[in-house]
Image (cartoon, rainbow, N blue to C red; front, side, top):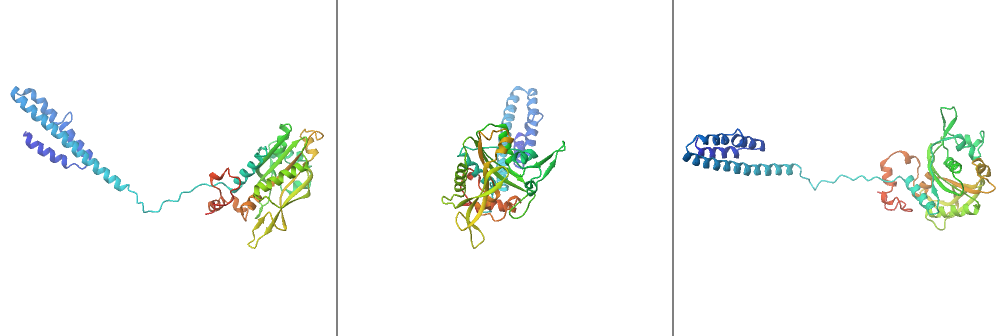
Length: 360
């Protein structure tokens, strides 16, 4: 064959290749182990010495020509493919961006963070317990006898266990106080935030709600200590130094004496409440000195130890502090509501951020 003619023909084949696969076929055809050039090289041994040298130089020259041509065309194909890929994957910077969805902390969780921080600064520890409790821990240990009307008033959810004994969905977090007193020796200084359950549902009540209770047991606690603790807490929580408050005598089976705490409020024209001032009163929490029978029931000598306890509903505190008018959306899983009333994660450790800068 005429090598000069073959080189032109080969170059044309190479230039006509549109893909790297087509180019590889040409390379194998001429340069592969079974290609045309290796076959020509094997025939050199049969030629006279003078022709072998000339023929060998021509074959090497053709081989180099083919390799360079293939490599150059390979670069052209790769550049063309890259350009097409970039064109297909191009980003239109004029299009509106997708909205970034950021999770927010539920107002109830934020309230728990705030309360925990306040009492943490007063050296209280945080305790927790199970939602399903024994009748003893939920009622009997708290000086509530079997036929006491309080058991009916609380509309308790009862749960039958395998032993035939009645367990309950705890109606308050007080059972954790009982567990703590049974398992720990005084002094005791705890708060207990958690879920509680009662059969009730309207704009201000839900079957599942949250409470936080506090318990202090030592040798020298007094009613004055209870009052000063709660006054400090309320001022810190609502961020009002001149908060108007009052303690009213009340009755709870597990405390004696007992008191309910009210704060001053004023109803505005739009129906909302202004907290801390005004001539009206709003009940916030219940409290009292731990009843001696409660101490005796958990193995603590009431002649040596005394203490105080308090409890409050977190939903009510949350609604009052952050201006939330209705309780029911708290548990509707409505992202629009949470976007409006929720808190950014960076504010988790902030004690008094309120809704400033949160509404959108």
